[in-house]
Amino acid sequence: QVQLVESGGGLVQAGGSLRLSCAASGSIFGINTMGWYRQAPGKQRELVATITSLSITNYADSVKGRFTISRVNANSTVYLQMNSLKPEDTAVYYCNLNQRWPTATIANYWGQGTQVTVSS
Image 1 (cartoon, rainbow, N blue to C red):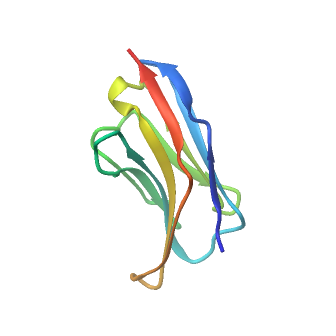
Image 2: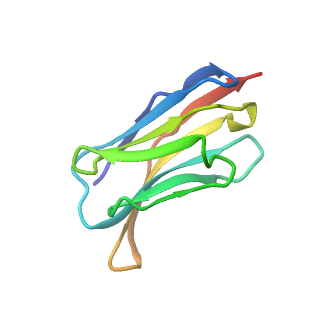
Image 3: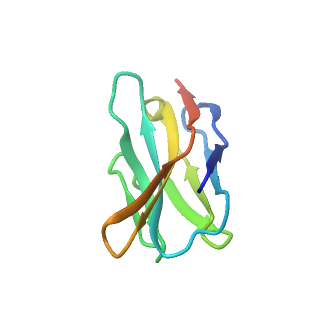
């Protein structure tokens, strides 16, 4: 069973930077996507960025050009580099692992979430 543990959240000022990390309990194999989602109070959880096992990335329009997702350590760790942060980026950020074969989801895991607060 995969465990996802996020770290790196905190309080930053607008215009600042923050890097989130998500570490899986072991190496991740096969067809999969890891990503970051966020949820602000009163809003639905939304996609921030994803990266596939073939290193294909996808970003929400609201973060394009500001955030960068990457994965290392045999694809078991995913990072989210967040630059030029805005107050509207404030949310709980969740790490996600979606495993598929070949296209159908066979497993979907979530981390516990890490709070990111951006002050004006």
